[in-house]
Image 1 (tube, rainbow, N blue to C red):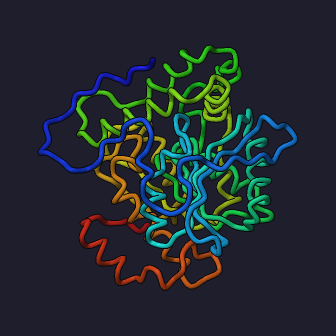
Image 2 (image 1 turned 135 degrees about the horizontal axis):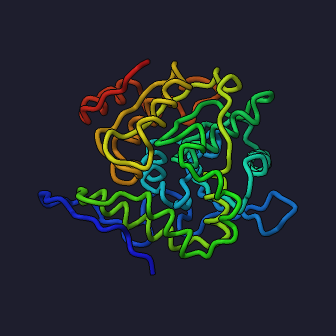
Length: 325
């Protein structure tokens, strides 16, 4: 069994928030949350997409969540439960085994065709953020991406200094791959919610097989970068944290340069997994990002469900700010 990095839980007052243990507490929301939907869109039957599709099906431009290297579709359960409760349609994905970015983009396009979705909003975390950008770039001549929310994302795989080993991940045993991923998890003092999030992600990592992990690490480190001129017209929100994460300051600055007109959603803390341990702020930033599409055919929600006034009240209650460029 894997063990998470040595964590020192900083002293905190008692809290009532639920602890994340093993499987997410799917009790709420509508639909069957316990089993993800399985879809095959490639000729290779072993390439299976797993997804949770929740919220009103009449929405034709939903928000799709793409997980990091260590994540599965259910790592976004806090977003699924909250956003569907407010009337949004959201889809959380788990990738099949793809070994290069072009293969992934082609498979994702086929999935959207299968789901009969012409355009979508994408929320990508870490590797998911990079793949979201590559898919927007891949479809730029016939756009399929209406907007991007990039959480702790990067635009160039060379920042990990692993491009020379990318082609050998498929040879490595599972325990070695998991050790590589765990090396990027936070260590040292963290608050209880962040510690719970790390424990949960270690559990998700444990559930991934050798080929799943090897292919994701290959996509994460294979020599590639985003070509910004192909996606410059897409509305972008860059979401990042000010505390310790796997993303360097240089990588964050590069994202700001790449998207000079992007909105910036900064979280004081949150580590690598703010969507788990700082879900209230993340969910609010997602709503603010999607608000610009209310009343259009690209709305991810029925405009009557959440008013701008209600959103402003929530923003004031949380005491968070969003920086405009």
